[in-house]
Image 1 (cartoon, chains in turn red, cyan):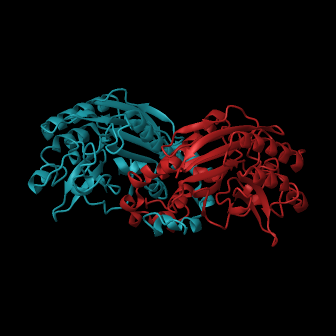
Image 2 (cartoon, chains in turn orange, yellow; image 1 turned 135 degrees about the vertical axis):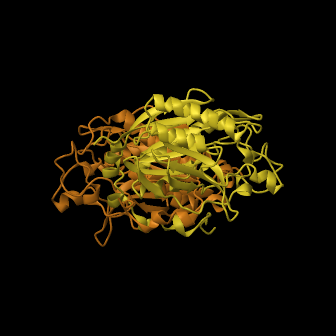
Image 3 (cartoon, chains in turn cyan, purple; image 1 turned 30 degrees about the horizontal axis):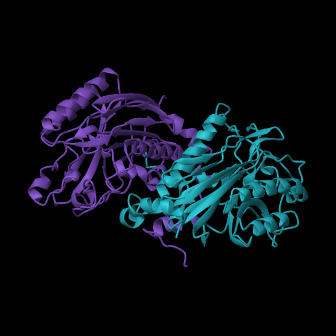
Length: 310
Length: 310
């Protein structure tokens, strides 16, 4: 039986602070309609898709912070998206800020099946940035202020005829992210991102080098774990802050097979044959034959660097 | 104090089966003289530099196998190289097949300081290929037959004013290799490789894709660990078997700063500022602030894939 999934990467242009969730969902519905017209099986939206990338703003009032969070999913704003996806028999993945009933806050993504049932939830593990206002930066990146690190690990799920995992934005720079999922047989990793076009701590690092790092991590993660990777950005300028865009689909050989051409709402479509993951998993990256865990101990035994004695 | 090291990557063209170690060392001495003329601090030669890449040949006679191994280092054949390096005050790294006094066989690399004293030894952990003759392959790759996996882990050493680590060939495809060294503060990883220009199990995977995979792994390993990587090939055609060449030096941003233009003996020289590793280690890849080892457990707890239940 063929395991070719047609996946739509639904890049989104900027979402301004003033934009309502209803207006954003209307844009998401339009991308869903395009995906449906192109017979996609799954459509993937960015990290924190429903709002602007609010962690760039320093806030001290908890009410203001919480206005960016969702207490339920689906909720009133997103229910039309779930309904339309179920009607079109298309799976969904998107990111949002999650406020739990017991008051915990996560940078979260969900995966929904063709009936728009949520079958997978992931909470971002690698939160970049900082927790307090940092006057040395050219702009703020306060994910460590507004979220706690994900508490669900890197689960994968059997769905869409394969094994699918989620991660979010900065997770893609960390090889551990892909590896933990690959050790569970992952065949498709989908992720959203909001990546600033400049480095707030290094003025000379502009968008070209940032896009290079983005591609490099996604391609290496796909190749070294013999998995498809679909990475979907928000792009363009949100209230004066430019993002890198550059959504792409990478095959298990590490090659880019689809890539966004704009920095705006744009659907990139690729046919992803999950069986193309088998060759790598059975040969050069046959973990069972080649990995040597007796020499990897530091990876889980220590968080930071321990240098050899002088 | 400046920590800029000038490193010569001494790519070597093919070494035929019939070529003596003395003839090979003469070529290595010529590359050393070029490195000395260009004021290099360290010169890096390939994996199994002293002989042809013999694991492509299926052998059943242990005497024949052992003829490719070195019982001492330095030994009669390599002593002129160590002497010349000490005279030039240049450090050395190269790979060779090591036969220990108690009869164990490893794919080994050494690092020697400016006095040509061996300060570091590494034994290849990730042995590719297979142990028995495989008639389904277009050529053999019998590293698992002739070597046992390295037993020294991934150590690093303080030398040349920085923290230096070694790995060998296929190790570079495994993110664990770089990470274990980065968790010890590595600033420079040097490695040699002998990579066939074709995939013995996938005829359509030719040299271009193999070079892409080589670059991808080296660049991602450098960027994600904020370290210099100097990777040095044997290239050209050894007794009918083509290799990819493509030696390169990669900076801690993942960018290639020097790359071989030929498939023959060729010195590539780059000035590697070890202080350029600091920014990444203090910001986006500040392990102490960002790694979440509580979610990495599978990396050291399981060797092969454990899929979720159907």
